[in-house]
Amino acid sequence: MITTPLTRWFDLQAPVFGAPMAGVGGGELARAVSLGGGLGMIGVGSATEPEWLAAQARVPAESDVSFGVGLMAWVLADRPELLDAAIAAEPALVSVSFGDPAPFVGPLHDAGIAVATAVNNRADVEQAQEAGVDVIVAQGTEAGGHTGRRATLPLLQEVLTLTDRPVLAAGGIATGAGLAAVLVAGAAGAWIGTPLLSCTEAMNTPAARARIRAAGGDSTVLTRAFDVAQGLAWPQRWPGRALVNEFTDTWHGREDELRGDAAAAALVAEARRSGDVEHAPLYAGESVGLVTAEVSATEVVRRLAAEAEVTLRGVTRLLSG
Image 1 (cartoon, rainbow, N blue to C red):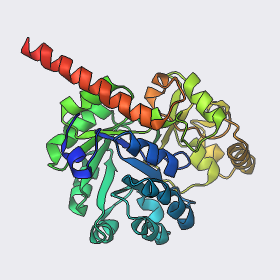
Image 2 (tube, rainbow, N blue to C red):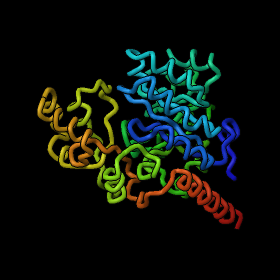
Image 3 (cartoon, rainbow, N blue to C red):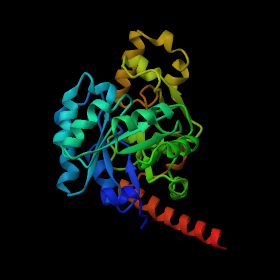
Image 4 (tube, helix red, strand yellow):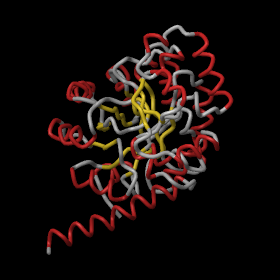
């Protein structure tokens, strides 16, 4: 078993945290990740209702496993009820990312809940430390979904020089060797999303999971096209990494033209309702080419941990030989 400051803190068997993916990561996925020995996270989107979060949180809670909740700072300013719902769910960890976490750290700490935040540059790290967060997630641009523009490994190394808080690495980690690599670099674990996109417990559609398994690592694009089309208030500095499809082929790089286009907005909205993967956002990271099977998230986490142990033993033998 691999032991790190975060496995000890959260009583985990594996240094693996499931990224809180809105629309994909509900209670079932969080439970499955936690049953695998990691910490599963429930993803809360901008339109999520508090009642939904409460219902999803009961799933891992009723299985007596720890879980976390992921919130977005830019959403909480207008929807404080989501913070209240997260606190009421009594998770072990709440992540507050994509904006300043400072206003939310105090209430979470008062409730006995640890706080994480994703960082994408040096300024984010300084902001996180001033806010008093407990866990820092160094999120590289290889990650799926909304992310920054710096690569994971250089960012991780810089973050580790700037903080003494536990750091998780996010972006591009989909194998045990990848997990071992970030642990050797100094991370206390990995924050994974893309390897969970084809899991049986995910809330996405069978068509989406099939598209994930068929995709190669060179078939993603970092784009704001979907956010602009839907009129979402995502801050401009965080575009989303998604699989290339007909919509991105048409609109990526033409976001100024896309703004206010009612037909394009209707197309994306209908695609999301119908499961049309050519016109709906299917967020995935650059490690997507390594996701080739539809399996339980429990198996994914256990495999990553087991493979990482083997890799780390090999590194030890290499260095001692």
